[in-house]
Image (cartoon, rainbow, N blue to C red; front, side):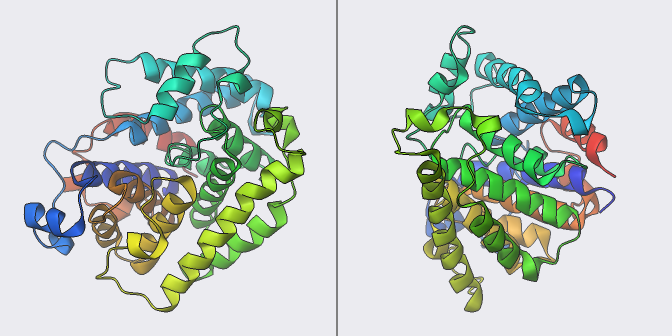
Amino acid sequence: MASAATGALIGLALGDALGYPTEFQDVRAIEAAYGPWRGMALPDPAYVTDDTQMTIALGRGLRTAVAAAGGISGLDAAHLLPPVRRAYVEWWRSPDNNRAPGNTCLVACRLLSEDVRPWAEASRTGSKGCGANMRVAPVGLVPGLSREQRSGAAQLQSALTHGHPTALAASDLTAYAVHLLAQGARPDELTGLLRSYAVESRGVYRGDWLGELWRYAQDPSPEHFVARGWDECLGVLDRLDAALRAPDPEADPCLATGAGWIAEEALATGLLCFLLFPAEPLTALRRAACSSGDSDSIACLAGAFAGAHLGAGAWPAEWADRIEYRDQLVGLGKVWDV
């Protein structure tokens, strides 16, 4: 898709803004406040949450890292770590960081701000909150990354804050899903491709990107550490496949694949909303936003998937032109659109 990167980033932000006011409410309360879910309107003004803010932070750090590496082929952990760490800390210090960010991100970024502290000491290895994969879409949008680079970058950006192996695996899978869709994969083949990738990745610890992170979780080996995360992701993919075999577009998607507060459920429920309506991007966003869980994160992931699949033209101008941080999102998208 010629404009997949811009489409994914704008879609992510639109989902974030649509789900921002509905988070922490059940479906009945949301529809009582905003009307039937299929007619939900984008708020005015269309403010976003820390989901979009941290996506932009990662995108900036990734762009800087690629330039410092002399191009895509040179990107490695040594080039990625410093600018992404700085970007996360800048987000943490920003006065605009007032959108109810998660405690894991706040604590980890505070520790990352201590320059002498090794990054792995800041990582919260017990947290698999969705804050890791809600922001990872830029990694899936950079053209030309090898499979190993994409996987390593997705997991490292997660590990800076959320070091639980399921957070790493879900971030890797989310970036891979965005990549596949941007490269033209069909929605109906997506879950099979993700499952194969998870199975192949199950025993692979990316030590060149993660260093000795596994030791902070007290697992007996790096392979044991990483397998825990992939196994949980494979489990939620089972739930996603079951939901797609008997789809119910009118039901709260969180009932099928989880409320999305944790990484693997955010991935699965975001995918479910997209895959229920692969040709109707606004309907996918509305279904995600009208859900009983972490509505903004679920909807931002659904928007990233839909935008990567359909391109920037998926989003009507009366929505896209009003989204907060529009210029920054479009600027990043143009760097990676091919």
